[in-house]
Amino acid sequence: MKRIIISLLIFALIPVVARLLNRIVDNETISLTFSLTLAGWILIMYDWNLFGIHYNRCKENLGDTILYSIVGVILIGGWVFLNVRFLQGTMLLPDRETIHRYFFASPAIIAAFTYIQAFLVNIAFKCLTDRFDIREKELLIILASGFLFGLVFTLLFTEFEIALLIRTYLYNTILVMILSYLYNQSSSFIPGIIAMGTVYLIVILI
Image (cartoon, rainbow, N blue to C red; front, side, top):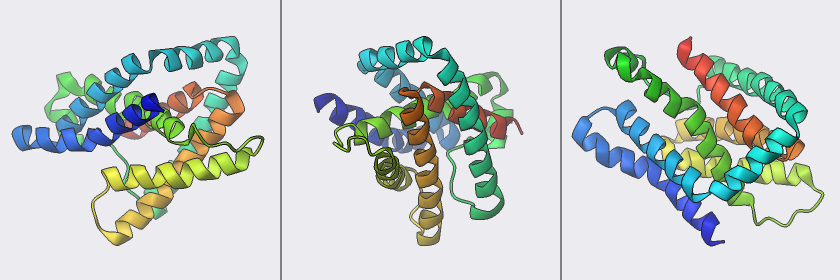
């Protein structure tokens, strides 16, 4: 329980640290890059045993990892496309101008908003729902993950504007449900990290 609470606090502090840093650098993308990267490395070191367990599961079931990573790319890619075209919920992405202006730092920026963000989201939603005793009821776990962590993710990273909050909450809820589905099918959050990170990388490159 202590590990879960500390992990969630680290995730919750990401926007706080970014806002404080933004007072100095006056660039939201750079501030979030630093905050996401810092939180990512802290959580990797703090939850090293958990990360190791999921990495070993990934290696031992390589076929499932590849399969559900591909499934995840298709599902998340389709949902991101619908969001961009119709729903227009907020996605945590860097702005194009900053990537062009700080071209030599662009690999770090892109890494922070793709695979590091995906790692943080996957490990945080897993921690939030880790103590749920819903045995052999995968659908309830998937729904609970989406509704609960979708709300946390939305409130932490979205501007307080009702219509935007609703759209973003719907986007984040379905996104986390997909990640939860990938986790339940593969018994590891690695496919979710690969899928979400890859889709966001494609969006940024496009």
